[in-house]
Length: 545
Image 1 (cartoon, rainbow, N blue to C red):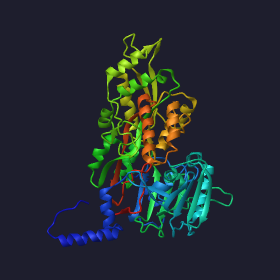
Image 2: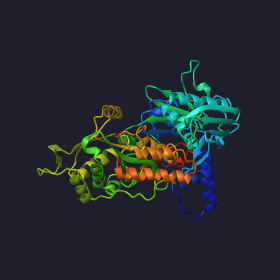
Image 3: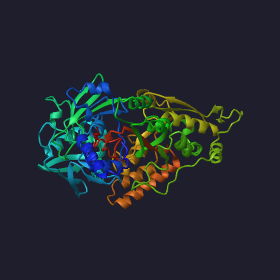
Image 4: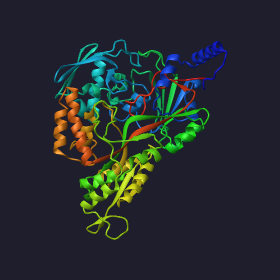
């Protein structure tokens, strides 16, 4: 509903108050929502809603999630993000502000006692959904289970032991200095759960957390997840009675679902459709920049791509501004380094590669790649410069970006064949090494510190170093920087890493990700969280009737 002017001011105020009371939204929540709305995804539709028996449909939010819901396990890396951020069932010890600085979560404070020891003071009077109280023992239990089941988290935390000092004091001893340990505890896979989440044999069954919503059911056949209001949430009132989440991996299907009323809220419909959908009465599209980048991974084990001049030429051949304006429809921004310029640790001296076909020609010619037969494609020693580029379709910007980049690279004499594939097929190709280029949209702030991305992407044995990049200077700088506790000095070292990889281009950073939030106008109170993986549900959301 839009505000309309009237001389009967008192009557308008009374009517507005009545609407807010019946919808469960407060005026404070409403104003906050107008200041910052976020990337949320909403699932299924009336079919899913009908499965929630005894539900007051007027205050049920149906979420169109962009991924299939395959797991609700919060400890092994399968469902941690979904259950913590999108279903709001679990919560982490540490939160993050919009500028990526840390703030209290289930822990109210923390301090570093010595190089390898951290102490956390826990929030009191927090109860799990099973009615039991959260103490240091349950937090210790959770983190130990996560460390055992989740190698990624274990490698980041570097824990020697965890001690429950008293009911509300937790001490963590690390095997080496780890300045980003509090930031890692913002990672959704570390969210705290009750021991009743496991059966008597130690198998994970269902997530029993502390969040504003409680797990109700997960249908393994339909993959529909249902959560309900936690009446005893420590944070205060909860706006919705129920949420129903269903995976809708196809962007076009998500668009149809919001248009025909099957969902209340979704994200990332085809960007070419955002203006049309926004013009539909009762639906609003809002665009935000999120901590994610579109990047082109390059297989450095393949002959033409191991040459830095070829990679630099490709980066000069790509027209980032053109892609942002005409492919992403301004849902995004041309990128320089891997971090948003608003992040406190980003190397602000970096600027995006701008299209320069003359420079690309110079570099490719120096590398020995020239067009000897006049067919428009460069060749060398009898081999043509032909590459394959694979991507996936769940994020709507990826397939058209792949096509646009293929056309731009061809103008530089590089033939590129694009393939839109299922993630399983992509993983198989990567494992076998049968790929050249991989266009992906990847989060850059799951842990609010540059070490997480720079270590995983650019260290020789980094977890996400798909290209196989190896630079001894980069390895040494990261190793040195990760032990520095003074933030200014720490960031200077990491800035050097950003400068080196910007020069060598083992991964071509194309654009900063933007998300298109599509919601019914009746959905109120959603607050944008730029630190979330895709979007985060907040307790103040409600349906205005």
